[in-house]
Every structure is written in C-alpha cells, then in structure tokens.
Image (tube, rainbow, N blue to C red; front, side, top):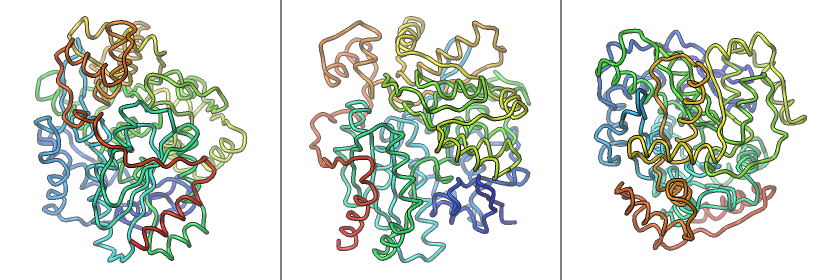
Length: 498
C-alpha cells in the first residue's frame, strides 16, 4: 500500500516518498507531511539494538516500495566508516539523565546524520523517476546544515548545491568549514542579513515560476537540503527510537515507560522528529522545546501567540538564532487534523502581520505534549561550567541550552521521567565561547581557543576540525538578501555550460 502524503496547506499529494524528496516542498507552498500514521507504526520492544537496523525499520515506514536489501545498502553507505562513534551516535549519563551525542559525524554536528542519507535518497529518487535533469539543491543555514550538506553532496554527479549563510552570524569555525569546502558541484554564498532572511530567500526561489522555468531550460530541478524537505527530516526520527532501545537494554526503562527529550531548537525540525517518533509508537512523555534568547517558541508554547516581530538576538548558540520556525507549520497541520485552510491562514498572517494566535483548545493539546523554556547566554555559560565541574564533560552552547531548560523545569516541579538531552554539536565548533565559559575572558581567537580548550580539558579535537584553520578559502560570494533569484539564475547558467 502506497503511504499517503499531504501538504500542510491541505492538498493531498498523489506522489510517493521519492517524488516528495525530489520536489522538496508541495506545489501549494506548504510542506509535505505524512497523513496516515496508522500505516507507519513500530513496536519499539521488538526493535534490534543496532543503529543501522533501527534506521532500516524507521525508514521502511516512509521509503515506499524500496526493497530491504537496497535500503540496507543505502544506510550502510551513509554511515559505515564516516562516524567516529561505534554505533553512529552515543548515549552517555548526565547525572540521572542522559546526553544523546549526535556530533560524531564528518562535520561534528547532528546534521550529519540526516545529510549523510539525503544525497542517497535523492539519487534513488532520480534513478526511480528516470529523470535526466540534475537537481539543484538550495540550502539556507544558520551554521551546521551548510557544512553537513556540502560534505554530503560534494562531487555527486546528479546534483549541484548552493549554500546560503547569514554573513557574520555563524561562528568563525562554522564559516571556515563552509568557505573552505571542496567539491566540483558546490557553492557557498553569504547573505547580508540573518538566517530568517536566508531561509525566506530560499523559499522565494521555490515559489518563483520564472526561476523554475529558467532552471528547467538549464536542465535543472530545484530541491532543498533543509528540513523543509521531508527526506531531511525522516532520518532524524531514528535516533529517538535508538535512544529508547538503549535505555530499555540498560534497564533504565520498563516496557512502555515514557521517556522525555529536551531538544535545543530554533527551526523546530529536530524536535518535530521526536514528535513523529511518538506518532509512530515511541513512548514519549514530554518533548521540551529549549530556546535561546530568540525565544519566539517559548512564547508560542506558553501563550499560543507566534510573534516574529521582535529584536533579532545574536547569541553564543547561533544555529538557533531563528525567529521563523519553519517546521512548526508541520506540527500545526497535524494538530489541527490536517486543516490546511487554517494552517494557510496562520502562515499568511505570519507573513503579512508578523504574528498569529492559535485558539485555546489547540494550545491545550500542544501543552499536553510539549514543555518549553529559554536560556540566556549567561545561563548557558553557567551550565557549561556546572556540567564540567560535575562530570568533566564539555558542552557546546546549544546543548547547554537544552540542559539548562531541563534543569530549570525540574526546579519548578517538572515531572521526574528519565530525560534525554540532544547534544547537537562538538564543543570545538564554538571554542572561544566555551573556553571563556569555563576559564574566563581570554584575548585569543577561535583557533587559539580550540588549542587551549584541548590542552586544559584533554578532550580530543574532532578530526574534521583539525587543520581547518590552514585550509584555503574557496568561496567568497556575498549578496544582498533580495538578490538571490538573480544569483541562482546566473549560477544555473554557469552549471549548464560546465
């Protein structure tokens, strides 16, 4: 039975998973979502323990008509020999709770897990559709998605990739990772603006029929490596199931016992994957939405009001410096019973008025499933110090947000379920901020801070970050946020002549 997909804006899609992956977004401007959770159920008690095997079970619920040996081969191609954890990710104690370490991949961030698979999904989509055109992948990044996409897609013959990042609003190490990227088919461009500007610019490309016509003339089709693409989102469901199975195996959980997750999030993709895991049968208690000073999600889950009309705050957790959380649209679609007209109205209000308000019944449903909180830079730094003093573990600022919000909720009487905090990046991607959190203000750059952090803590620098300082800069393009359509059009013409 072909599993049913639909748009968040209401239209059912007569297409399979592979077409959805290739298209990236729905024709009506919405995001593509599952419409039939009853056909995607997993019995967590019968799952194997290994990450590739759990990935096989989860992905088979979405990858229509792909035979098991082929899916298994794709999973092993994505992960074998590319992650320095013995089972792709790790689960380690944090007091009475746990850290799910998702940063052991090729770029030292959690985005590697999905972006190691997405290129293979797109390749399978092209093979199945016998599509002669290349795919042009447009990606906006707040820091980590960009390099993970560049690493995943480099030198693939079936696609071209353009990454857009907000100028001066990612860490120096994140920027150097991107602008030094190799690959015949990749490009990187800074946008003068913030991440929301970059993300909105990419969305304009998908919505512009003239650009699509120009790309079609160049034998190119658009897709995305952001989590607006369901093929980017689905692999993230896997590690929620994996974490639960590990805790069952260790005797921490009994059969059917609920498990909470604290997720540092800005664009709402990583935590939505946890919500999807719950819809597929995982015994999830509360999903904790952990925000930094750009706390638009905290206000939303507290009051039901989504208001992007607020100052943009540059924080020490730049990958969460986001005011427009794209994947929240997916949650609204599911929790309104696929009321596409209502969701479209919310999104229209957000675009035109800068805010929308959900009704009290919907807010109550969300609050039964989600808790929330936010964290200042100072609180994140204090959490980094506390955790290091407790266990000699060094958190990155994003993970520190997740730990702080969990501990704050606990101090206010939050339920005592076991909780897993998603650890999203290596501390070395934000070396100076982490060093100063631990040892005080220091007159040194990111690179010296990386060396000093290593010397003073003894924690190894991930291989992907070693020698990064000496890599040559290969990408220097910068554009205004309103110039993206012309930029993509010009790049497509060059690609067509290569």
